[in-house]
Structures are given as structure tokens and as C-alpha cells.
Length: 198
Image (cartoon, rainbow, N blue to C red; front, side, top):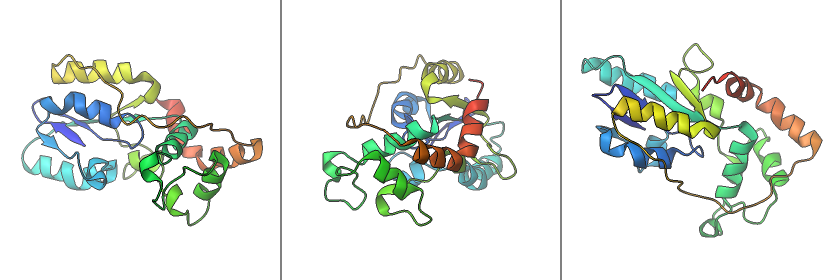
């Protein structure tokens, strides 16, 4: 999560949605940086609203707009699966190196997911106190150029996003029945994704 106080814009880093690429581009123009500890770097909107927004208001820094990236839900989950299949994760309980995507999704859909499938949900990341999404400007992952232009104008910098944290290529095949279950689980996520105008 990064904030430019002069530009009055905050970028909330959705995991597995290009956040590292964006943050490396905007970091020189930001005053408030949370970028190392994943739990702080990936602060969701509710935590931002409760803690950071309250702090900004106390400092008389108002009208800060929030922005984030939202990915096609199954593609987003597939990115987690691939990311956790990296060789350096081989001896970690969260590794997906030796399983297929079906097994990963079956774990994800459990009431109490195993370690490898504890990745949360995009809709929970953006959820507001009383709204499906509290983010002011939400961009689709496949429209990063739109976010790039938006932030370039806001920050008065000519930005360029360079891909980071690329994962191993692994197939994301699902049976029709399992895909239907996953789409049902992601009902709110798909609603958000389909209503993003930018």
C-alpha cells in the first residue's frame, strides 16, 4: 500500500494482481510506503479505511482517492496456484508444486482450507463497510494500461509497469462441475469484476 499525499491518491496492493509492478513504478512519487511485510503491504480496504484514512483525516489530509486492481476471479486463483509452485516453495506446507489445479481448487473450497489454499478472496479485499467495494477507482488486471495512465496523470509522472514475480507455467484445467462450484463461490467477485467500467 502506497500513498502520495500531494497527489491525494492511495494504491491498495491486491495480491497476485500486478501490485509489485505498480508499486515499483509509483514508489518515487509516494510519501507513505508499506512494501516489505506482506500483511501490511497488502492492507485491504477495511483496514485502510479504519487505520490509514483515520490518520490522514487527523493530519488534515482529505480527499485521498483509493485505487486497486481486480483480476478475473479464476485467473486470480490460478495465479496463486502457480506462484506457490515455485521451486523455492518446495519444502513449504503452502507449496503447490506437486498437485494439479483441481486439487488446489478442491482445497480452496473446503470450509477450513489447507495451508496451500489459504489465499482469501478479492471481494473481501475491496469490501467497504456498507458496500460491495469501497475502492474509488478499480481497474481490471487486463487494463493495466488504464491504471498506468490514471496514475501517471495523478502523480504527474510518466509511469511504466514492468512485470514482476512471474510464476511457472502450469495448466489451469477444471472439470465443468468443479468450475461451477468455484464460480458459485466467486459470485460476488464476478459481480464486481463485471461491473468495473475501467
